[in-house]
Length: 510
Ligand code: HXC
Image (cartoon, rainbow, N blue to C red; front, side, top):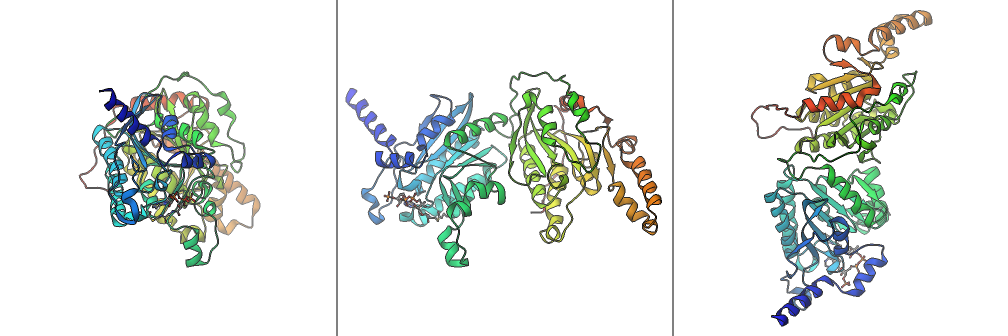
């Protein structure tokens, strides 16, 4: 028996060494952790159970018969994050550059199947040179098997991708179909074709980092949701994100113990809105003051800053926040902000996370670039998403809610459940100045007359009461009590049920 156990230990040690000490040192030399070290940071201590440690590839071409490393370049299994189950895979760059072979793919598919069956998220740590070149179509088939499972799992369990090294070619499409992508600054990149191909085809000269680094994907392309300085910080942030999410679509979002009281008033909110409607203020401040313990996990912080999206807790339970940000583009909706918010709203709906919408929006951003870029179609995404989702929705209008953007931003008419407004709210077709210039064009030369017309329009519409008189606003609330009112509203919606017409699925404008 002892000999047999010693042999097992030896096989395990061999597998744990991956591509060998030299390659492990090289990995460390780049400031990266190894696949197993990453799992140690991600998961609760001692919780990781590894599967398929002894799996090897079956390739025979290009000398691969003699080149066999147990585990085949990916560490898979399950563990817990703060006691809650998650399935994981972690690609091992020290083994054939983390490249994906047929068996490497089968290992990933096995844990994806288990995750769906057992109702737990999948977290994938990507660090790979792409399809195993020696295997050809067998590796490509492996990728497609993973892609198919990504789609089946979408909306059933949360899927989180962490890009911690190269992810190139078609390999980018597995992360792209998951719910969240986190990247590590300076050591990770994602692109469909690398700098060399780009140079050949378009003559553009670009570095790996410029083409597909974390900065590009968090700021410009919006492919990634967040980026952090190093492996450890990134993985700890994944743990933080995980804590906000339910385990599956049938599960309720977690409720955690928080050190905060729901009756906490915030008097500073009573003086937040500037005297001039033209002056901005920071909507992030409103979110932080409403949230339990001032904790806001922002998604896509560096992209489309005119809308803020992310998770907070109220009474310990997860709430998704969507908020116009007057500090950027005066809070106008545009193509990027519409896409950003629509996707977030649909994630919340898939996983029963209630949505709080904070509104201060002067309208859709005008301009040729926006129209040519398809603001009609992309703005419709946000409208469609809000109208489609059935989770509890509470809306607070802090200041402007003008025009179509009033309708879009979780208005009562598209079935928000509870709609509040601060006394500073202005709910109208447009701002008073623009409105009078159109209505009284013939009087434009008479400055006094126009000023009076503007004042009249302001007096009539620059307030929340016209909407409140019609029941479109359920109450006009004091800013300082927003946290309490919103949290209590969500309490009433806990057992909300909303029927939808029979259909296979809607057809959101893509
Ligand atoms: C087999 C691979 C590999 C691959 C890397 N290696 N990529 N082996 N298949 N795809 C091996 C290398 O031969 C090397 O082995 C080791 O991994 C480390 O690679 P290096 O090149 O030394 O590392 P580095 O300099 O850091 O460069 C990393 C890299 C580069 C940029 C990822 O390796 C690279 O360009 N690889 C090929 C990328 C690629 O074109 N992949 C196919 C994409 S198409 P030794 O033994 O020397 O240490 C694709 C299609 C998917 O993936 C389609 C899905 C639909």
